[in-house]
Image (cartoon, rainbow, N blue to C red; front, side):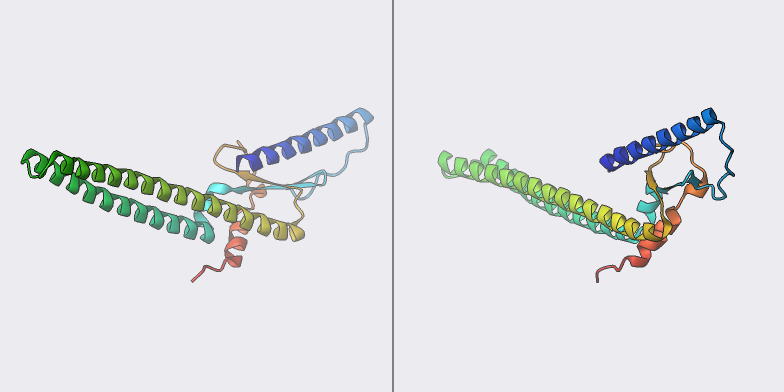
Length: 200
């Protein structure tokens, strides 16, 4: 997402430099002033817009479904690990009681049980790492699907709308101020939701 932001910011900077140089050139040449553009989203033939990413994340049904699925999976992982950790703690407590009561037939047998519990603890840590890595991988995959769906939609959307630049805006990350006439968030969210068919 950051890479895309940098790319878009770079494009915007180039566009404004071009606009500035065009304006400066006209002032030097004292050319006849052209009438102001009638549409305030167009500047010297460059048509720009922005999408509020926070709103998109909150209202795009695909994103909502992905988040709900990830929350459920995270909760399942947490419950699984907690159940196994509780069972292991009970076994450790039982072992401690047996050691205190000299319930083992030999020191060797106590050591075997201790080693078994250590292995169970290591196995639980390995399982936790594996499950957390699985969640991270799935989250990365979901992020790619989310971005691909937006890019595919914007490519199609822009065939009829003809924007030169579409910015993404998150809070004050990219735009400190922009006229609402440049905001196409609702159109984009509505279009994305119209295309999205949730999996049964």
